Picture 1 (cartoon, rainbow, N blue to C red):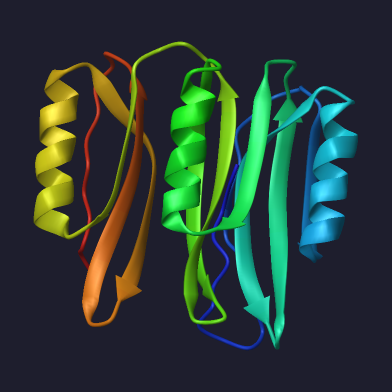
Picture 2: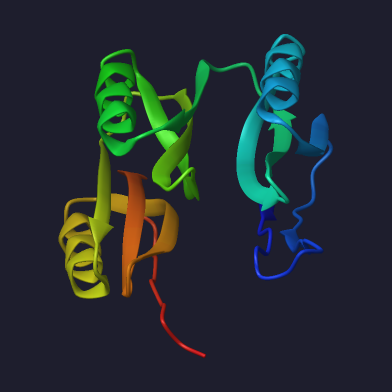
Amino acid sequence: MFLFPSAATAQDAFAGVWRSGNDAHYLWAGVDWNSFNAKWEELSKQNLRLVDVATYGEGSQRKYVGVWRGGSDAHFLWAGVDWNNFNAKWQELAKQNLRLTIVRTYVEGGQRKYIGVWRGGSDAHFLWAGVDWNSFNAKWEELSKQGLRLVDMETYMEGNSRKYIGVWRAGNDAHYLWAGVD
């Protein structure tokens, strides 16, 4: 399941992608950080793992949306921090055999912040952020040849420039990247 909140209107709209399955699952939406984090902790104890997260502004409040599916592996959630803090956590958790699977970014109080979801794993991985399309695409091609596959990406505007963030993990399956089209 993937969530795509739209920040284009005051009335947020969502789009989702479903896949078949009979495992446990949960959707929690439209809540503040404290409620979201409490639900994450509660569902973690029930062997549910966050598989997607989104955030959006509603008036002056920040709201969160999450999708959980069954799982019992190690996991971690880190949110509301600047890039240096986020990157330091990524490096720290990599040493603990946790791999970033989801990254989101947003602006709050004039400052860019990040959210990350980690899951257990000891495979090769890579994080590349804050770059333009040409740099992102070149890195995608380079990492593809090294047996890494893009598992999540985020795009955002910084001034008048579009920037990209990518999360890669080990893989050897067929893959394709296509972006920037109408």
